[in-house]
Length: 148
Image 1 (cartoon, rainbow, N blue to C red):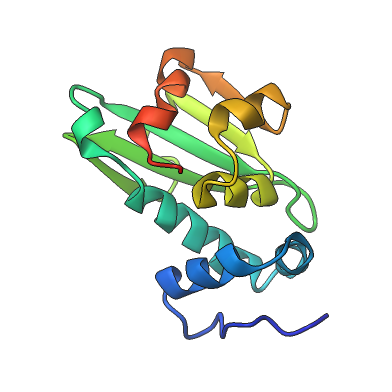
Image 2 (image 1 turned 120 degrees about the vertical axis):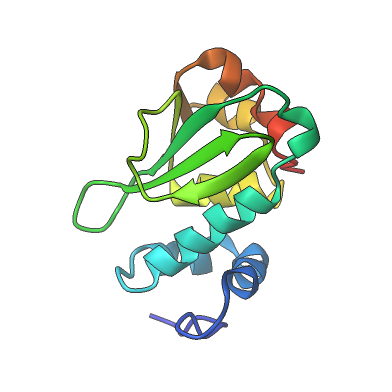
């Protein structure tokens, strides 16, 4: 397996995100099968998703979004929780609360979402993003997050 173009052990999430945004699909997919590198890369993508949050579009929203990433080596999925309240968005260790909305997506498609290469509606229409729970909240994702 080729070496990653960034030192995942010492880089901060923003630097990891910048590196993976420049990778081609094959390079990214190679990171996703490495059980030691995968958590840092996915964590950087979710951290970046939080930076895309648009508080000016979140008036009155108090919601929990669970992000579940398929295709985890060895089975199962990676699980992150985003809490939206008081016009803020933060990551919490799941489960702090039951989800109002659950997003099920593969890591490569989450990468396309947070880099702006594809939007949530397009991914959902292609069957690449499953949205469960409060579909009204799901429809607001492009307003709540500046995906690109």
